[in-house]
Length: 464
Image 1: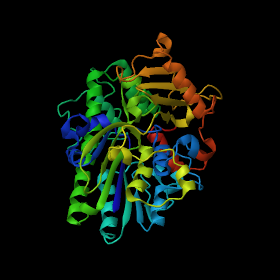
Image 2 (image 1 turned 90 degrees about the vertical axis):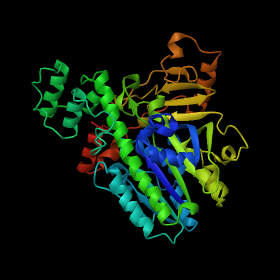
Image 3 (image 1 turned 60 degrees about the vertical axis):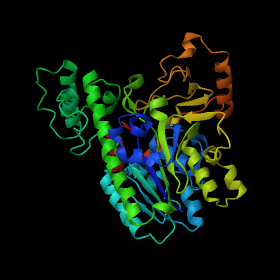
Image 4 (image 1 turned 45 degrees about the horizontal axis):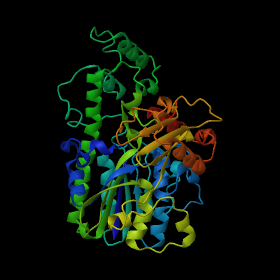
């Protein structure tokens, strides 16, 4: 079996039609889900790009592969999915759409016969897809594993026409003015004296004009976005998804034309989600609340019936699932290193759960969380905390997700600790993580980056 592995940066499950959202955002992904195995409760194990992809490709928690930022590479002693498949005779190729996933920065080039790096901050879906299809067409007679990474839903939300106005065509307010300037479609001085703008909106344009604008002002909405403006920005996010979905449709169509559909496993998932205003976090994946970690997962296995699986799983479970599905021999030492678990027992109906407890970590190692029995407990770093202005500082929190899926009611300060769930979760988390841990900014690693790469990370809001 061939394997096509699609990962999407910054994609919330609840903005795809097959997860109950506007079906018009993702008709081709919907069509894929309708004939596939669709997982309905999927968490990323960390909330930023490189560490999450490293967890996907190694099936290790960040605390074990020790990467918490987008600029520290994976160590050489960690085995990856690409290495395993290459050893089993697969031709392997990777096509990434963000500069910080380049092989020299991420360390994910191991095991790939071909790895398409990019010098661009963000590559659109059409360019990445064309490269992927060209490689695929030249390797149709080979048994191949191809990883295609799309970055479109990530900031800056800037879908090409007509997707930029597809979901909110008649709006012309502050949200559009700001994002036109932010995406360099307009100069910041053209509207600074607009009488319809508020003082904070005018000040934002002035700071953009003077080069004093900080992306964190956007992340925490210190730029004067109101409800109607926020609705428009969400339409840009959906436009990015729709644009990407169209090109996934092309990929699926080309698979049929190359007669590969019946002998190709397709895996579709995301590295993390995105906050669109929840908890005061706008257009970013700061923190480890559910919007930043809930993601889609669709696995199409030729000849296997479609189904929806409600059990809690992670994107870290994909690697052992592939090996289990293909019945590939992996030595005992390697298998013991997997933190993820095969999802095949769920797919085959042999069990209703594979994770009694699930752990989640925050970028820079600033917080850790545990999910168990519909409860989620978040514990921020307690010691050795430097001020990371580009990240989010959690408070200790306990949430009962079934009645409170939006995590609006923190049970810790309320004193409602639900029959000692607090103590059970806290003890299990600290047993797994250790009673204290240090934040990891990887300042030495970032100094090794070229200035152009630092500027790309700055433009995406990862560093100041």
